[in-house]
Image (cartoon, one colour):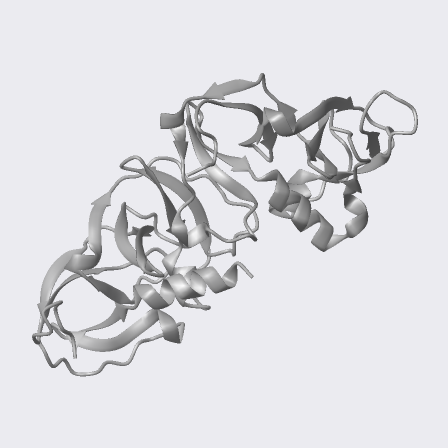
Length: 161
Length: 156
């Protein structure tokens, strides 16, 4: 079941693909999307897990950049076989009782779509980090992984050790 | 936000092609290291100063070990109340000032003591992480207590 923030059935989603997982569509709710944009050079962060690309400045603040394919899926395509990302998706994420932003590269072709309140379950072609995905559903005949950004942040924080 | 109320005087260091910042208040000494030099440095010029093992910051930060010291290489003695350590870096640039507007907070997703950085600077070269010397020294102590030196009472 996909809901919008009023608890009604149905939600507006941004569907996209990420470098390293060309055969998987993912989505977040539009409310979670802050911007899809180009970002400046990413600064590496020592001691970070491999899926944490670094940090970048976005609208006057520092934002963590992750490699979503490496974060979610062990058998993501390895470099140099990946397509280059076209843009970065900057999303708002809860960290405790506060909000932060998280960015990741997406390939071109992102689209907005409306998800019905009841969408049939879908099988994904890879095994994903369980806490990183709310569910896999079929939207417009395409299996789509609905990202759980809260779970992703929890994984990010726990991976720091 | 970094707990500096105003302008930050910092030392830019180069590690594996990336710049980092050490607050100048915490820089006790800068030494140039040559091939064949012992991997220790003393706190100061006086005799009986403790020798501090030199930690290769490139190896610590990025897991890339130097098979040999490439010249020039520099050792920064970092000193906080009670403790000191010495780190080997690829390069050192002239000290700079960072205005408050260019001092940015670490993102909440990276606010964790495992990341020894207290903030980020906006510079012409891009973002530069400010080393949190206390957390760095704690990390070194966690790796191996001998990597840090407990300072004598009253010494800087």
